[in-house]
Amino acid sequence: MNPSKRNYRATFILDNRGTADSIDQIIEGLKKEIAAVHGEVTAVENIGKKDFARVTDKKLTGGTYVHVDFSAPTDGPTHLKERLRLNHSVYRTFVQSR
Image (cartoon, rainbow, N blue to C red; front, top):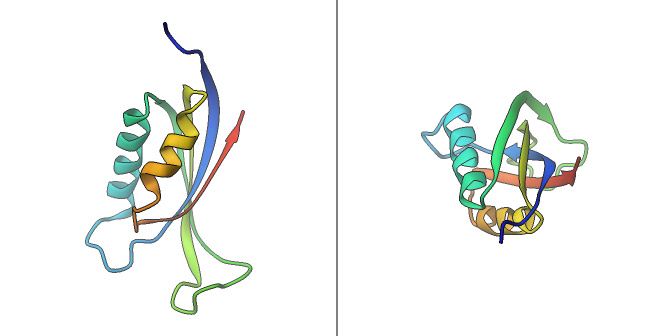
């Protein structure tokens, strides 16, 4: 049985402090994580670094925003968020259905 796929747009806020990885390397890692939950990336848009409207950590006042459009099974976003929960390069994740 092949589950139907839906289209999603994920917005990631990336934090590469303390790592040797560049933003492009982190984005490639995100693509691999999406593929691991049976998703297919259709578009990636690097918005760039932006300051936060509300700062929760004085050491992190902004982050790099990236939009990723992908298609995945209906449980894909849940599994993706769980896989990225312990990834310290991803500060925040927001997934919306398209």
